[in-house]
Image (tube, rainbow, N blue to C red; front, side):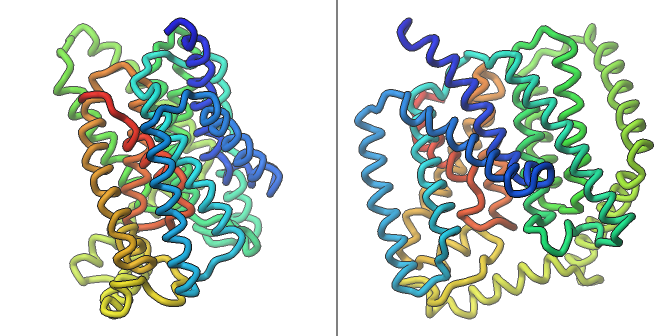
Length: 404
């Protein structure tokens, strides 16, 4: 064990920075255009690739690699013969997801329960970059709204950014900082403050996108975390004054933030209206474009079900905003093993989530947290190739063999 101990410390740092940079790519594109985007993606993927090569390969991993490679080829061939829309971007992103699946499996199998914490300098790097990135994002969108007249959900006519994608990556950044704050033993009050600020700023960044799904899924995860944390913890009334001061500090930060960026106040009002519109849509008393678009995609699935159930939908092009529907539409019966693995992974992740709250492993808590958020998000948005953390989580959950 002593031989691998220092290597595990390095790998924890690589893992933390790697997953953060993968999530930061869209913000990087705002800072440095395509250079920032691909630099963030490339470095994040490289760090995780280093983990893949440095961890010991056991027979269980080699079996998983062999089976998943064979299945990946089958799905690719089904897509090819069904004349699906396959371009270089889909191929590259598909391969990236496949590699992340293997990385996740190795991490889960080798040090998924590691209690080693990352170095403070890496934590500071992540929190500071989060705060700076969100501020630049809000400033960027403020300029579009007030100077160009761009829609409050838009990012420019020539931009590939979209509010759902931005909300998703901000949710990932929020949860990364939250996992560090909860599970890493940090003694510096300045570093703790930076983490709190990064969480708050990420939350406001999500609200600024006006994307309901990401905000809702983060709230669900944090509510369940709070419930189980309260359930498993002993109540210490001596900590109540400290919690009160923390709440006052948080409210003060929020007030300063809203006053410094008037657009944030507008966004709070707008996202509240969007949630009210969704409720009215459910009651059939209002229209909601986003919900109607998703329902239209689901209707295509049911209308074409008899044609796609065996081999998938021929000439498949759009993604239907739902992981389950997408799997069947693309691969038919060939997708059933993936669908079964997906459901099994989700059920296991829920158990691991409860378990990780009681345990002190930053790795377990972080990756389960990111997987659950990505899984929820896959139910209403993001295609399979674009949801990279879903595949990292699939691998991690599949490889995690410790008893819960």
